[in-house]
Length: 112
View 1 (cartoon, rainbow, N blue to C red):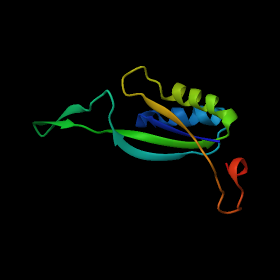
View 2 (view 1 turned 30 degrees about the vertical axis):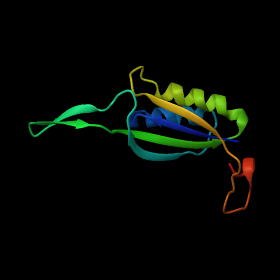
View 3 (view 1 turned 90 degrees about the vertical axis):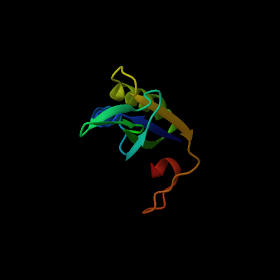
View 4 (view 1 turned 180 degrees about the vertical axis):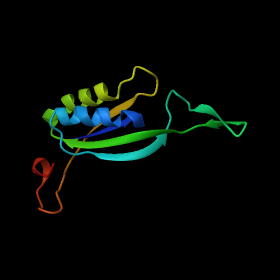
């Protein structure tokens, strides 16, 4: 099992969710986060004063899948999130040692 974590632009969430649904992934966790990479933030004007926005709003997705689904999932996320501009995001894949569905006690692949 793997845990796939993706950081994407907020307005691409619906496209990524559709891409994930098309490949048969049923569940994901979404968190609103802030951060920056090569973008390094940007400058905004507010009431005539210029200020630096260091952390940009992002969406963090976390999806647990079987090993066989990882490549298709990563490809789906990348296709759904891609705008071709800086700040499109990143995808990380981690080994997942154990999963337990609390309601039924199912473990590992059955719990996903």
